[in-house]
Image 1 (cartoon, each protein chain N blue to C red):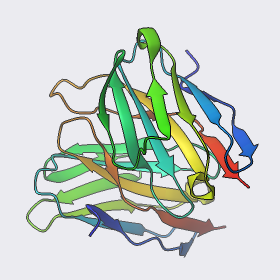
Image 2: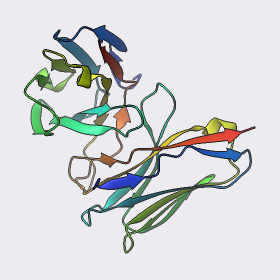
Image 3: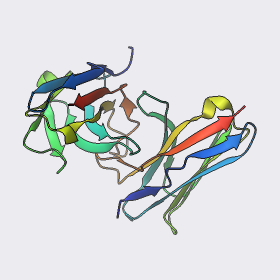
Image 4: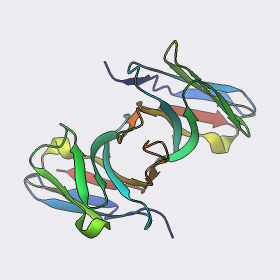
Amino acid sequence: QKEVEQDPGPLSVPEGAIVSLNCTYSNSAFQYFMWYRQYSRKGPELLMYTYSSGNKEDGRFTAQVDKSSKYISLFIRDSQPSDSATYLCASDTGGFKTIFGAGTRLFVKA
Amino acid sequence: DTGVSQDPRHKITKRGQNVTFRCDPISEHNRLYWYRQTLGQGPEFLTYFQNEAQLEKSRLLSDRFSAERPKGSFSTLEIQRTEQGDSAMYLCASSLLGGRGNTGELFFGEGSRLTVL
């Protein structure tokens, strides 16, 4: 079992839709939870960063972490074609190693 | 600073040849990481350096792989006697040690894509 599980999609939505991306994790020691966005042929870039449980909002993006169920979510409001990318959830224990999910490919159609 | 740079961006080689990738991290970052990413998968941790010290290596890093970070600046990843299974994107990332001792934000380069024929 991978430490971070993520549905690879692809997920295709019309422009303006609300997108929900989800991950589960198995390591109870994870304290930090991240969402990275990766465009084709580019390296990942950090989108959201959360410590422990709770919600964090940044513009059209909201990250949620529920440590009791080991569930990580990212919501994108008013999705745009420029949001089309692969979204990687990631976690770490506060040490040195960030563990990534497989990534969900998102397509937002104009 | 222009971010993390990697060279070459793409390398095609024949099975059995040696290849070397270079990574130049963001100058003030004290941690440097190598990850490997295959098609449809997320990045997998290979190794990391804190300054010039290599502090952890993944079991994915066989003895054909060696990484160095002389003087705590740029890093190289060498793969000897390449195999077709080594074909992947090799990503370098750097970060500042976080206030809680956590990894902090990883800043990735654009990767070096290896194709082994």
